[in-house]
Image (spheres, rainbow, N blue to C red):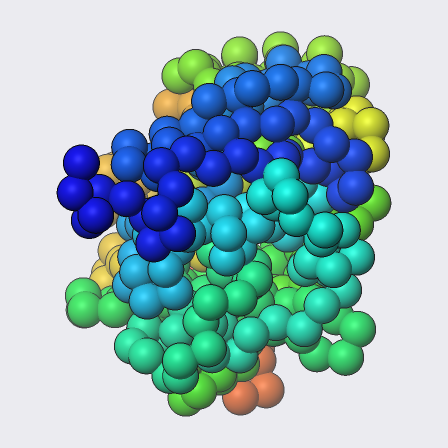
Length: 376
């Protein structure tokens, strides 16, 4: 075996510990040649949705398809499994799990992302791409954040906030942050459990901004973790009924129809979990609406009966109108009626063209009437 086949420390295998805060969960070994994990011993039994612990640990790394993240992982040394574990400790802002080498003296208070400053160089690289400094080899929430759009986490006083950019390149690219902002106004009319989105510029780029909804006490579990199959609407409703959350998820599907949400997949809705016990305590607030309100539509494509809308639909369920009608209850019906003449609140500085907002308002009114009158 050549020197190049061994990691920089000269070790072929390295022992680590997986922890939840300061509670040891499992001991495992990393094969640095094949980027593989072997669980040596598990000390605490976890709920079945964790699946195989080796996959749980490996999958804590941000997906390479997220814009700018592959470059960031390479520049920081996190593109190998050993580098990712040693530098980032597999930390995330969705829970309180992390890893350390078996002989490390670190504790949770030394590494928690919830209480420590964020590296601004890493955040800027994640948000913009490129290289904005050399101090990349440190813990950061960027290494464990999911999704495909360029984004970063920042601290503003006591608040942890996410900034998320739009796409680039195509004719209507970059409108997604506006969709996030305007859609949250409609979501607010249906539920108190939602993430509020604002608009701002960051390093001269328009982006949406929202507060973190997890904490050291409560984390986020995506629906996909408890149901990884290709699920129908009926499957999702049945599964959420087991947790006493069927009414909440029905409300979500009605909201998604009103905002024409094309991207409600099984990783962007789910549960709030007690980080200590791993018990599900409720449904997570509704978030991630940047592929709603037809951000890529051109003028003249905001009407039912047109080819553009015929090609659109939800990720779960066959049709927005039919799905929403199936999920209607007395309360959501009242909410829909109240929204019959809804108008967007315009932003003080950043807005879509007035024609686009007007067309969207008309489309929303039509959508609401179609849901209320279904199947007529």
